[in-house]
Length: 327
Image (cartoon, rainbow, N blue to C red):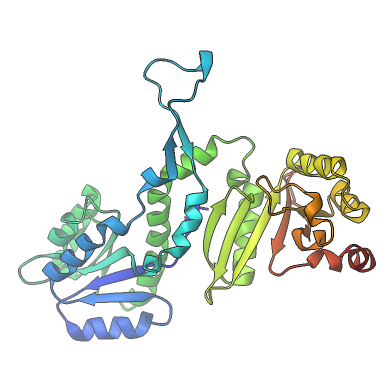
């Protein structure tokens, strides 16, 4: 699992227009294809997109001026991960047009496929080289050198199937690499649901069952914002035992409705209110049911609870009478 993922485009470069047309026809229902017959035009396009790849300086804030006392040494720098910035990617309407994988024909005039891929080595774009028998040894050498990420024989009867498989794999690797700084920062947080195998299994199951194609890890509220192919949003809210205890204690101290407190105490539900830290406030006494959802314990974790939120007021499905009395 990566901290974020969204659909991207593939670029296909081949000097044969008929091959490009055939490939675009085969993949148009499942992938966004950008086709080119000229290497110089394709290279110019990818260079123009270079700045659109995530710049992770915006996701980390320099907090070196904070006084850490004895924990700090001269020359140390403190960086704070700002996960809230990940959510802003949704506002980038060009994100789906960003090229994550380039599929390149080996045998082209003026510039070979290997030369083209070599020109991309400073970009995060993954590369697949399509080669015939004549260029096989060159392709193997380029792969071993790290110039290309994969090569397929163009005349293979199963090349379309193999191409689909490799594009999907390399798109995953693209997101793993560009999000690596965030993954490393998340791994340092304790506790962290992001690296919990039970949570990853749950996330994969929820994604498959609901056709999720896009996701962003969030800190406030803790969990993952998701979208399906139609752009419909849902949220996987998660909390550990300490967070659930804090939510319950603060609600009790602020004289929250008894129905809500019972749900929180038994961990039948979890809440997140539109306050700075998500805790209950008396301003929401009348409509508390809008901010609390049925929860289940994450199997195998021992401490995590989760709620898959698709629409409001699901708490009424747990205790219909109590929910209606408190709403």
